[in-house]
Structure formats: C-alpha cells, structure tokens
Image (tube, rainbow, N blue to C red; front, top):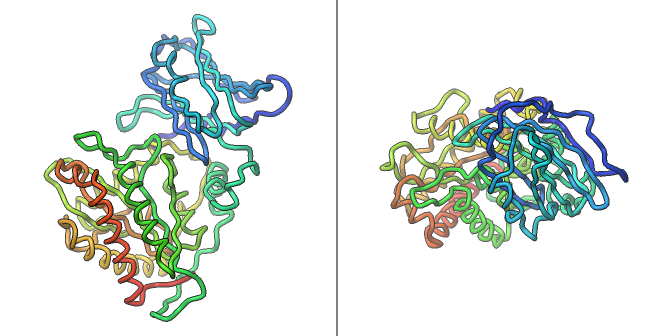
Length: 418
C-alpha cells in the first residue's frame, strides 16, 4: 500500500467568522515547477473526493474562508495550465458539498485552488505516491460535519467512514459471534444479504479493450441482484456502495457486520495477463495461502484497491489483529458451501473458469462471522466476455444465478442469523 505521509490525518472545519490558518501546514518547498496532469472529482452522498495528479510530489498549505464558505489550497512549484483552468467544468450540480472549483496563479511559485462549498465540511487530505498508472496525487475528501448528515440514520456508511478515519472502525460494531445453524424452519428476522460491488470512484477496477470499466459493470449487476432479492418475502438486502464512490475494503466488511448480514457477496469482473482467460469463478477466503496461482493473482489485484483509492494508516485496528480461530475456520467452511451453490448456478449461464470454489487471501472476505464469497462474473480482459458484460441480458442472468445460489444454500440448511 502507498504510505500516505503525515498529512493524512489532518482535518479542517469550516467554522468561525474569519479566515483561519490550520496549525498543521505542509512545507512550501522551492522545487522546480511541476505540471498538473489531471484533476478528477467524484461526488457522492457520503463524501466528495477531489484529486489533483502531478508528475512530482505536491506540497501544499490550506486555510478556510467563510461568508461564503470556501476552502483555499496553495500548492508550491505548480503553474496554471489548461487542466487547471478547466477544472470548474468537472463540478456537477448534484454534488452535495462542492459548488465550484477554480484555480489561479497566486505568485510565480504558488498556484491557488479555491473550492466554493455548499455547506460546512470536514476536509481530509492525503498525498499518495505513484501506483497502478497514477502519478503523485493530492487527495481531498469533503465530509459533512459530524451529525449534519440526515442519511446517516438509515445508512451506517458515513459513521463507519468516520470511525475508520479515526482509526477505530470496530468501535460501534457488534461483537464477533459464531452464527448458529438453522434448518428450513422460520426465523425471527429476514435473511440479510450484503452485496459488495467492487472498486468505485478513483479506483476503476479492471478496464477492458473497449474501455468497459469493472466498477460500472459490477454496480449494474449488484443493482439488478438487489432488485431480485428485495422481491423475496424472507430476505433483506443492503449494498456496500450504490454510487460511484471509493470505499476502503475494511469499511465494506464493517458495513456487513454492522447490518448483521447473513451473507456477504463481493461482485467483480476482473482481468488477467492472458486475454484468452475466460469464464466465471467463485472465491472464498483462505488463511493458508491461495489454492491456485490464478487465485493468488486475483487476490493481489483486488487487495490493491486500497492502494489505488488511497486510505489512511491512522492506527485502524479492525481486522488487523483478528485471530483466525475456530470461528473463522467454520465461517470459511460455510463460505465454501455457499460458493459451491452459486458456482453451480453460474455454470448454467456462463462458461466456468474453474469448476470448484477457489481460495485466496481476499481482504474483503475477512469477516470472521459472515459466510463470504467473491464472484468473478467474467474476465473483462477477454474481448468476447467484455461484450457480454456490457449487455443487460448477461448482467440479469448473473444476478438471477447468484439469487438461485442463495436460495439453494439456505434450502440446504445454510447458516442463519447472528
């Protein structure tokens, strides 16, 4: 993982009547001028992310202005160019936090970026080193002030992100507990399914020859599956993300535990070095190494999502020190049983890359008490399968197959309730 520098944990609050300098200020060096090569903005209900990408490391300082609320960032050694001049065109009217963004040359050595805000925010900065085709990035996340986001009452994501940024993701999670066995008889609550569309936001996932992005395809499939599950009388469904937003892997797992999910299904459409690779696959967690070279490769690419999206290493302890004891072993066994049912149904609508459930150390499958699988719907790197992934027909077939696997697992007496 890229190790964000000491600026990672900084926060700023837009409050008070006058301009306020932060106590923590990046040193403004006098390095040679660097060109900004890209600016990207990812608006979402949880938070808005702004990234500024450059060929060399970016050194900055920031302060706030009120009446109206503005966030000002001075970046040293950067000169105004066409990318920066046009950055205001990237702002969407639906962005809940950002009204406009503009840049100007403050002096010969300093570029000034001004963010005009729709509401008071809490801002978090990260500086990321080059990774996965990205150059040096300055990342700015705009969060609502704690307690001001009404949707937080219905969706725990915002609170989980806040806990994660504080380094205490486990603070408000239920205790880990082995799920009791249950037969076909009724239960005191619906079966709860957590769907996890992989990647999102700054992290596009794999990209096909015809520019199909994994993050878009899997979100579409997850939405179709959510619709199918919601129609079932005894099931309830949640999603780790329902927008084009970056969510750290551990927060995805935490959201499933927060909702006391009975099953966790991460949906992907990955790539391989060989474009001839094809077929659907299902994976479960392994704590003893991957069961195949392909599984190891895919786990490495999926676990790199946090490197690409950029996460803070601010002391988060959730899962880092989890002991994989008998509870984890039992959960993996249940995951393998669940995965087998899903794989069998996928085999009716798609070629199978492997006819058994594979295993590797996927970070997103590490809930110690929730049977969890990762479904590789197809290889987006395969031109024929990329075309299929773009079609509503195949997306619906995949969704229906996963639902059939869920039903078969519980009909066979799968784990219920926590």
